[in-house]
Length: 544
Image (cartoon, rainbow, N blue to C red; front, top):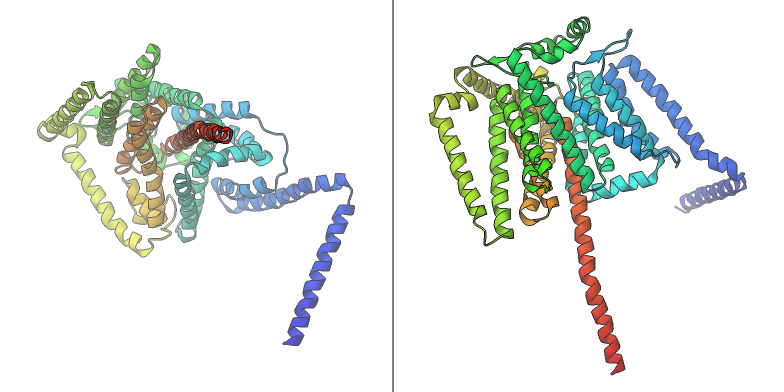
């Protein structure tokens, strides 16, 4: 026992002596060498990561190599020295360009050079944002502090965002197609998560937030116009712009893309896809924009902005009609019902003597009741929204998908069977994102994504009712957009609009941050008079 104590004391003494000598050596080192040490460490880590990425580029598919970069990027961000490399103006411009390109340019606008993989216009715009944004985050503690301060204001949303990323990453270990899962996860990081964090950094105040929403509405007007033209000519007009030789080569390299580019009809009517791959994704985009248009139409002061808002709402409804999407009709009815109900309650709280809330509420109940009655009893409306015989088989197909998915879900309910591989696991296409998440990322992944969708709804609708300011109305519009997204996710598994959802989620985080900052300032302003009063009262007591 005594020998063990002596040995441990000798080891402790040797370690303390070595540490002291190391400190003396560091202090004796010239200052300029010590200043270069972080740069040397960052260079060494960069070389090591370069070797890893080079190995991944040989073994994994192209998107898998990008996934390795995305997973190891936090290491570079942690060790990179503090340097003045922040370009806020460049980041802001590239972010808006990336947003417009991802919302308006089709995914099949790609080119190929030599033996390189297909390079899409969306990917080029995304990488134009990645470079300055990562440099800003890695080289400036101030930028990291700003992003962290905004994220701390919404801890539950942050937990869900990081939790979903963690479960999607863990699912790769149990995936039957790990390369496909890595590729899909890399694409999600480079589009959805990049948009989320970049939006949190770029949007500084309410004016920036409104400007971004205007960009989204302008993109919706463009897509609706293209969809109406496509509906008229019954042909994808965006394909005419793309060179036929490149398109044929792209389809031959991606056989699954051919089924998306084929013309689609329902009940004898053409279904427009606009700049999206499917009519369902086009309708989902429109129903997410309609609540934003209602915000401009009902809560902005300028007449031009109100007209712009109504134009976005009307064009969104027209886009749903030409898309022929049943989920689009259900989604817009659900989000509009929530918006009208919340508006009536909000108006009743602010103007108690006005009859407008009661009139609008009663009109809304009657209107929605009439629409529901038409859907139930009028055959044409029933087929348009709920579908006829052909659509009944689609509904039965979703039931078959549930029965095929349940054994897989039960076999691994924790990590799932691989991100973005649910269709291959059950050997059929999946028409519900709920089924996809439960198969691919397990129950925890589904719960985290449910939090990503439901938390903005709770915050937005609650603030819309209790906060009578324009900021409250803005939060309510974003909440209703997520209501539409939620209903569409029940019957749609495509991921085209996930980037838009994560961008809007970043705007919700900004709303929460501004709301809490305003609440703190108001509490401080309320405490200041009481402190002054207590001080003056003490002085009067002392004088008396």
